[in-house]
Length: 222
Image (tube, rainbow, N blue to C red; front, top):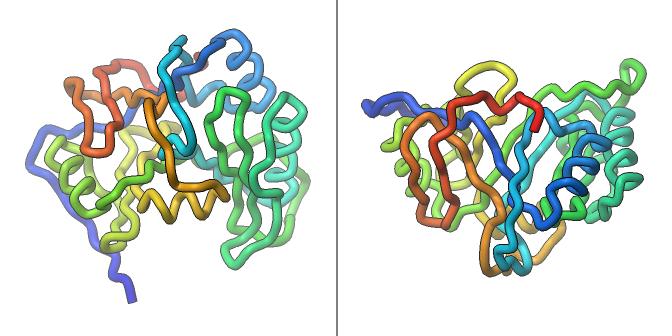
């Protein structure tokens, strides 16, 4: 049985306030994310950095019910996304996985197995889930950087408290487990093609995820 623990830090409080995706064609990506309905949660930056295979992260949307999951998956596919895992029921609810034209993987899910109302375009929560080799060590690294742990399940999973309501949450998961959940091979090389904006100085973690100083909240249109 896994025991949930919380961890606090004596460092100055830090939080994730922006998520920037590095893409080859920012205008095309902007059109896609606007059609997908998630453009308020991300920023875009032009980049030609080489990247092959799994980039080590996913952006996960939590929504109210299966019909809303289907709506987001359908909008993404219509705008050019590729389905990695068709939306379906599971032990945990209902969800599906798509890959955006720029290569970013998105998971859309709900804990509800049946709809209790009509589909909406509302998003309850957005989580940036990064795959790491050592969850415990990375959790402690981030605690040392001033992030506050909201949930922690041993060496399996850790979630950090957001700076304010509406911001993207940051969570850690084992890289291979994350890839399996998304339906892709775990292997990948090159750039992650993502930059995390925080309320502290720039740094890079042990798995190569880069942070930069950012002053604006994530829930601002790109």
